[in-house]
Image (cartoon, rainbow, N blue to C red):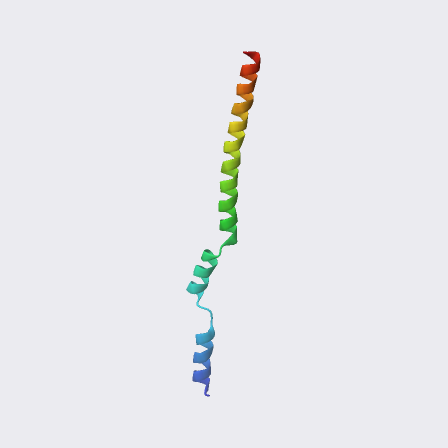
Length: 64
């Protein structure tokens, strides 16, 4: 095997940078965790609002 063939084989085995970037974006754990956290945070805030509404209704009914 001559030098040019060996160089060509090495180039073939190198990771394609564009393909690597696509894989990194596809399996971006930080983005996935952020989306999950945002979803949970939104649901928690909605639950908090409902809880406050129940407390206020209870106070109104007790004092009414």
